[in-house]
Image (cartoon, rainbow, N blue to C red):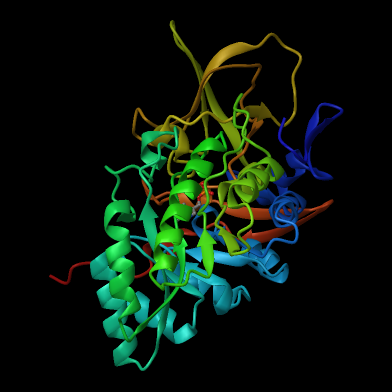
Length: 416
Ligand SMILES: *Cc1c(COP(=O)(O)O)cnc(C)c1O
């Protein structure tokens, strides 16, 4: 069972909060996050790097709820953003611009200008053209843009193909072979100040070796660059540390940090990391109610009130999430496919799960704190879920359930 989740007399508790009561009080479907879980994960990364200069830059796209950003901002966290929207969120949550790094292959001119105005810590530049855009925009606005080049190290992260980003065939980063020349160009640009070097090789990595291999390539390049007079102040290793969904055995935060520190050797350069999943993934559940049980000849279906629009990971990545009844029953379990109401065969949350269920039961889909709510949509004109944060035995609504008026806002009927 997930951290902070426990069974007490047949009922699931998250921290000291009864999840059956959360479902009753706030309705389903809803995401529920553990404050303690999030803070412990962030602290674990921070401590693991010990006295080596470092900054943990939480990857906002994993879960961008303002309350989570503000909890982390209070700890002095850095943030890794991938859009102007995420920049706005971090600033509104109290995050400091000087602790923000900006990643992504398609930053628009407006986003670059916005980030320059706010004074972010670093742009992680993903192409030579982007470097030129940033230089031009900086000069036009009398600024100097701090940059790292994101290098594609051509390292196999051995993860799902949709979340592997460090291979030559992927759209991300600058080819290793071209990086040196582009750094030298950057060094001569008036609107650019070189700060560091960056890699991000993928997500849900369950082994330290690909990280070490990527760092090895980075260090080679750093040596070459510094011998040519280009100073690199920080090394950004990206995110990607995996979590246990089913039976994976990812390295702990400490194992991960130790592997990087060992490879770094005597180098005292500041290390940045951009973890998302490993901070929030195992700190969230999705509560959903069984609306209908349908027993066909070949298969039993539990049709629940959450769907692929609420949690896209099962259908997008074939992801497996534990699904646990909030109140357990003693009747003989049966194999169920847990499916939603959306009109798509791909609308499933779990398949072939042994459960004993009755209509009206509440289920907890586990480990959905990362890439859960942030990937949700309004497909089938379904309002997005409420989000609740538990803190011990207290619950806070950190995002209200959307109303139909919220959904239809800004739409116009064609004036005939
Ligand atoms: C998505 C992403 C991350 C976070 O990845 P996790 O696997 O959630 O840790 C970090 N950096 C970049 C550039 C990303 O695109």
